Image (cartoon, helix red, strand yellow):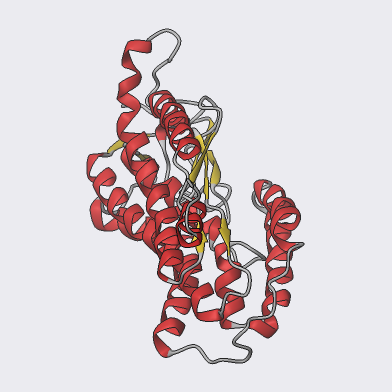
Length: 319
């Protein structure tokens, strides 16, 4: 008979599937390469031969995202939780970075708080570390650009960690200049933003898992408070947070965390440290206004942002 023994059948069921993840990886690699070339001012239709110039951006961004997802994957394996390989999500390259991030599928019913925290924190912390390295390298490759004396434009906002790294690598930026980010630094910035959204302490997001493990009784209140905070930011500072609040409410809040099987078990100090470290990372990478509106010639932007990126100014910076 050709039937497999039960143990072999179980292993076959748990073996990660490769075809779909590989196809999505190749598609996302293509879309991020196109986006990387577009961010450099290359028209992919007029100059298709220059598309490979988008490779540094693509490789950096994919490395950050995959570090995040494999952090979840290996932590899941460590705790015996069945998890798929990462499914990268390609996105329209001309209007996005070329990806909406990635997901992994896991079966974590009845998971205890220790495993929940380990799995939830492993991804964001891994992606955060790679994003720091990418940003430092990218800032070394970035240039300063003199801004127009008049007019208006848009630039990228700067989180606490990005401001610190920019100051350490480049130094103080005069009011009449901006940082023309190298594609590797831009990928680092996007990596921070992706990590930030995943660390929102809401529902089934990574930050929600961490908050549940740390503050099980208050988790629901924390999620609702954070959503209200995003709505306020969306109304008064950056409208994109309104969409984010709606999205996380639909996708991540309606599914509540089941009661932990270890009940009121207390996390050890190492896991508490990792949990609080993750929340601190969230604070230093959070961006009230990811996209900033500038009036050139004024000492301050309309949103108080300090990091200016020349390639997305409406009036291009003098180089």
